[in-house]
Structure formats: structure tokens, C-alpha cells
Length: 330
Image (cartoon, one colour):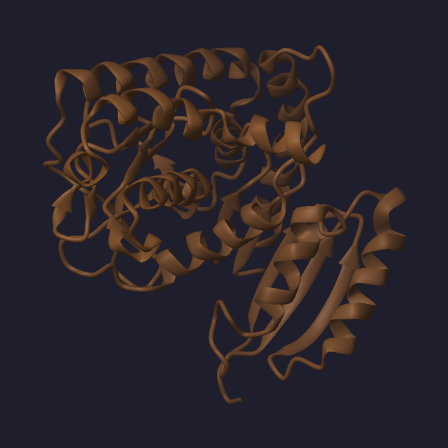
């Protein structure tokens, strides 16, 4: 392999999402079979031993693309010279904890990681998976002023994949037939999975599923509450599906989006798209240029119903920003 290695940092590397994610990155699935991968695993000191076990398993797979694994309990050393920082680790929501408590508890983690990226990595793209991912990404971005804001994103691909799977099942078609289903706004129960502009093959989604009632009812609630349903059924939060969606997220940014298509990602609002205030990390329909650069898709038609849903999720993100305003470096 003559290509320059891609350095990838994964935080929360010993956790369930990290475990599901690392082997697929190491295998060459993301960056290609001809691109060497160097992994940098970041964990809390108490979890370093578990990360060492994961590293042993990675070595035992014998992936030709995996050329180096380093384990760190310090963000500065973990992020040194990385090209991609997958910020998976975050404090989970505990019993009786309100969302604003979770936001406050995670804030300092992402202040520290943003500052570490600022010091250690100049050519980096950061993807925030750890929840609440939109506002965690906002905090990290504000504390990493040397890196352009458009290199920060938060993952809503899991929501898109969930929505596509539900529609495909209802319509009796393959998931690959569902396209242009954008997630708007926050990765929370306020998100808007935009079925109005999505297609199932050549049909509108509404036509494919036999009407709008299911889409506004069971579908909408099903997508918004899917994470909670998985916890109730499994006793644990989504892990393999979150990792798989993170892979999809990175690949979508690395590959050129086909003409007329788009995907979902939460990125900094430019202030000129769909009335979303500038700077919010907001999920939009995105089109990638194929080199990590992207654009927010313009001209998507929004009904009054869609506009109302987008306004609701925008309001929630503004409220979250207010909660963490003291953590946003000027």
C-alpha cells in the first residue's frame, strides 16, 4: 500500500459502540483496501485495560490495512495528527436524569476534547456520536477555533437508517429502494424524518405505504422513540446499529453524492438555509462533493406541516445552546 495512512481517533473505544466500530474501520471498509489505517483509541484511565483487550483482538484479525494501534487516556496524545476524530464516548443518561442535566454533564467533556483537537490536529474532521450529539458537537466546535467549523458534524444517519427501514418494511420493498429521506434538526425525539420528500423507488413514500395517516402517526413516533424502544427490549442502548451508521456517515462524506440524491447529517447552519439560525449544529439534507467537503441541499420543498416540525426542533436546539452558553468559547 503506497497511500498515506489515515489516522483515526475513536473516543470511548472500549465501549459497545467503539467495539462494534473499530473492526470495520480497521478492515478497510471505510477508507479502502489500499489505504493504511492507524487507530488511536482514547479511554478513561479505568477503561484502558479493556481497550488493550480490544487492541489485542484487532491485532488478531490480521487486517492488512491496519498498520498501527495506540491506546491513550489523554486527549492531546490521542488526537495528535489525526485525520478523523470519531467522538463516541459520552456520559450516559442515568435514572431520573433530565435532558438538560445530561447536556450539562457532557459539556466539560467536549470542551476538553475540542481544545485538545485545537492543539493536536490541524487536518481533522470530527464526527460526534456521543449524545446529546448536536450540542456536544457545538461545544467541541466552539472550543476548536483553529479547525474550520464545517469540519464538525454530528450523526443523524442512525435516524435516517431507522426511518428507511420502517418505511421499507411497511411498503414491502427493499431498504435500498428508499432514498432522499432527510432527518431535520436534533438527534432527539423532536427530530423530523421528512417522508414528504422521500421516494420508494419511483413512488412517493405516501403512495408506497398507502396514505399519510401511518406516516404522521406510528412512523413518526416510531422513529423518534426507537432508541428508547431498543433500551426497553434489550436492556442496553443501540450499539451495533449506531456504529454501522457512523460508518455510513463517514463514507457518505468521503463519496460523491449521486446527482439528485442527499443524505442526513447535522452540520453548522450557514444562517441562510431554511430559516435555521447560524451556527446551530442542525441536521439537514446534505450533498457531498466526494472529498469530505459538502453543501446543504437548497430548494427542498417544505409543507406547512414540515415547517412546523422543523421550527419545533430548532426551538429545542436553541434551548440546548442556551444551557451550555458559558461553555462556548468566544
